[in-house]
Image (cartoon, rainbow, N blue to C red; front, side, top):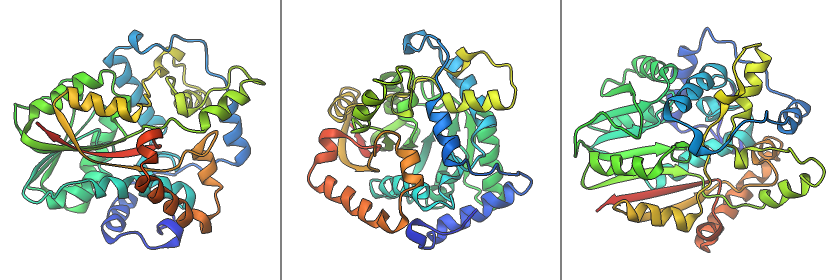
Amino acid sequence: MHRTGVADQPLPSSLERVHQGVLRVLHDVRLPSRPTFSELLRKEWSPVPPVELSASALHEEEMNRLYELRAQLLDWTVETGFLGFFDENAGRRYIYTRRLEVFEEVLPDLRGKRVLEIGCAAGIVAALLAPSCQEFIGIDVTETAVQFARQLHRELGIFNSRFFVADAHALPFPDRRFDVLASTETFEHLLHPAKALEEFHRVLVPGGSITLTTTTALTPSDLAVKLIRLFKRDFYVDTEEQFDKKAYLAAQEKGLAVPPEVFRRVHRRFGYANLVRLFQRQGFSVERAKGAVLAFPPVYLAVYQFFPQSLLPVVRWGEELLNELGIFKRFGSVTTGFHLRRL
């Protein structure tokens, strides 16, 4: 994997160190080749099987089974978030590093704090945060991810972190256990967000804080998808995904006999104002919020992959302007970083 950051600038030293650790842990893993543009189009154009996609028909055990399967099928490819920070493609790398940048901007001082990360995945963000903390605990619903996080932190010599398989809806910790909760790109996948927020409130000390990123995008891609559906009614994309099409196609390519129902999931796009009201109802005040990543229609991941590298600083400038003007707060963005305070 290429080792440079956005617009060919070096990665921050802390992220470069994590990158080296990831490479050592993955030394026996042969990463698949990058898909061609035609392969990307084929995947985006593929229909989903006819299954019930209502969130009310799902159970947490079913979703956890999907995410374990996804971790085994997809999370060690160059197309997904575990390795996206180090992607050799500047456009795709921008999506991940920009999310991380906004997350860090709204993050409080962690020195001497007890921190819990919800949805720790492979432990990459944890490796950046844990050295500053008194204690760091990460949870995820997938054993595959947790095992990798443990191995990565041993490789990096980080000894104040621990990782467990656990569910955000029923945290296995006593009341007022943590000073800070952190979560990146997880909240939109929770089956019961309000229930999870109750748990977050319970395990935080009074005055404790949450820093999380989640999608609030109500974007131009919606209009583009509607236009495409005039010609292809079953067109289905990530912007509205309640079915994990990428994992489904990966299972098909490997010849796995997995029922289509296994790939149902929750992928919410909260309206910004509604999300703020949800936080407030559950006992949190919004101290700060910032949006990141423009959602180019119709599928921003593919667009960014082929976006001219020289124009990425212009995109970043545009995002900063949209934040200053309050546009992201009105219409949302692919990722919004929130700093919440427990009341």
